[in-house]
Length: 183
Image 1 (cartoon, helix red, strand yellow):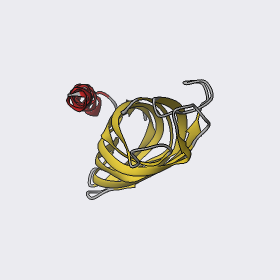
Image 2 (spheres, rainbow, N blue to C red):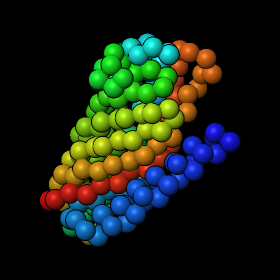
Image 3 (tube, helix red, strand yellow):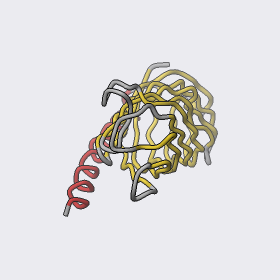
Image 4 (cartoon, helix red, strand yellow):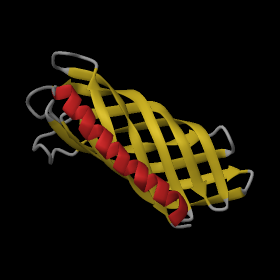
């Protein structure tokens, strides 16, 4: 029952982000929208008590990058790393919650090429739900031309630990993100 409630919350949040993505693609010269999946590491590992953590993430984004007049769509490779803020909860990330900043980006494309690099991402995790706020430089080159700019956005993800008992040193992540900005 608890898992069904978590998935219901996740689906509601994904729907909200998807609506943002749909609107942002038409509202600004630069826009990104993607479904993202991947995995990462946590060091030294999440426990019941908060502690400073270093995190990595590698994955795949499927979506679109628009940097007017350029546009790119398809599959992008993503890599991020960073650490806990030690603010929420005080002392670092725990099994129950965490907050921090990672940097990195995504690049590639199936139709045209695009990138969102560099990106600064603030993550806030409560249980298995992760919300992100990001700022990225965007560029896209495709059949309609090339462009670049900057954008901000949000995302929501489901965090799934690979270990059943602490410390949790690896995880899987799946969710959606969307953002928009100016040229």
